[in-house]
Picture 1 (spheres, helix red, strand yellow):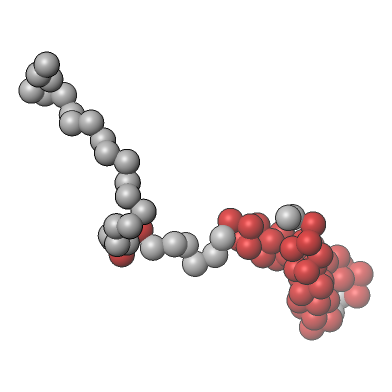
Picture 2 (tube, rainbow, N blue to C red):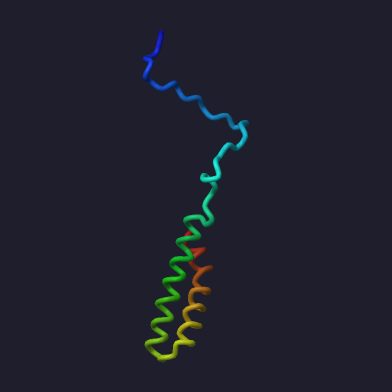
Length: 83
């Protein structure tokens, strides 16, 4: 039984004993999707908190410190929440 000349050959299952032949462009990402979501959400919380603090006290340094503190405090909470 011959196959058509223009059909692809059947694929063989990958053997786990073969060495890793990934190209450099196929390296794993720097951050996982979960870490990216956690950091983006923490940044959003920090910006919102800093903006609210600036609107209430009209002090940029206090707003910046409050935003950084809120972002830093929300990272562990978000890490446990998104799991």
